[in-house]
Image 1 (cartoon, rainbow, N blue to C red):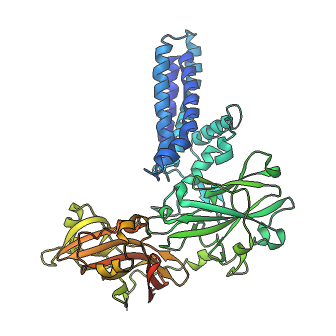
Image 2 (image 1 turned 30 degrees about the vertical axis):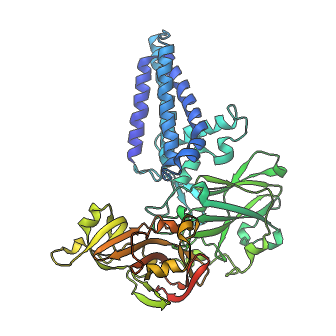
Image 3 (image 1 turned 120 degrees about the horizontal axis):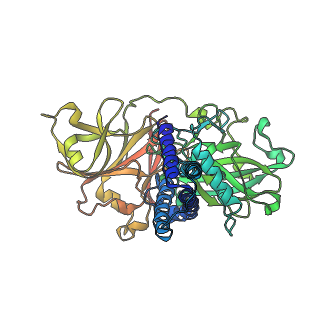
Length: 546
């Protein structure tokens, strides 16, 4: 791993530099390194949650740690270099050996904290992945650095936070994150390339229930012990936390319950789930080690089962580094266990989703209903020049059929004729994952606006058009387009679904202009209804091919 070489060179350089600077200077730098690390950790969560998480969600936790640490260390160095201009003279051998030893410690602590910050950005590009998930959903250490600087620094700062330098509030690192290096390693787990690692607080909500031992849903080998009980925490995540392909993924190792044993009187303890329930089915870690949502849905609910101390009082649920506080009172557990589709936890939702989908499903439809039509197709009405789309700020990719398709676009472009265009410049469709299909709903603008009288003045507060399938799942559009002559006004942002009606701006166009709404839905579902707010529901009965 390249990171081993980089870290080794850094630590050796620190050792050499401070052996030359002397014992006193090396000691001062070590103290400043520790102080900078503690101050950076003190401002870490307030900085991330108050400023960075909305602006750079995928990088917030890493940037929010590494930048304050380096800036505080630099500021302290400049200040103390001016305050302590001289040096304490020692015997040369004491300066070399003592200064080198203290420089080595400084290098390990600062280098380790930087590695931890990089892990909080995601899988490290230098090839370091400390943990590997197992078939039972747990995570075990798979790699270690030549110099385990991340574990040394993480254990050191966690120890200080939990003990001598514990905050008055008691909100130490150990209480809310466990060991710092382990928390970073779990954060960096990735189910697949491009998977999101962070969740914003407003994308997560949770409630909990206590299950009597006689009704425990856990398999026999995971039943609670004599001094334990089962808590089920129901977690709901909204689409903003989903991966770019419209699927939410999380490892059980990235989920933790913080609780206080002994009736809430003891310090917070953290445990990871022993099982989960999803869509009325028991989980299955054997098919794949992570839990995933149904593709394209607006939100997903997963119920995590924890075996905790019999007197435990839950405090929070942590998912991918983000915590949500739990209420002091539990909800009724019975609805959590009703309607389970399988009797034993050997065949869950993961197995159900494991079958690969064909690369190119056939178009399906159109289904027409009262001035509108719906069709399963990812094709466009005409051909767009890829160069024109790029100049208008759009991006393209190549689909499994070898076609150039729109990956992301928000702007105006013109349709082009096929002549004189190379095949790789002809954009004919929209990008989507193999597990999903695109449903296009078409209608005249006057039909769209007529379904909700007087909506435009209140548009900012209204939900967008939605599709509803036979399982009760709701889908919002990921884009829309309006064609006027050869000009195409399009918004297609698979990672940013339309969440408010006001995002569909139709003011420049006439009532007879056709509006196309693009919905991303899973393969194999049946769309039974199109709706806009509480009015204008239309039955569709559109089957999406598998």
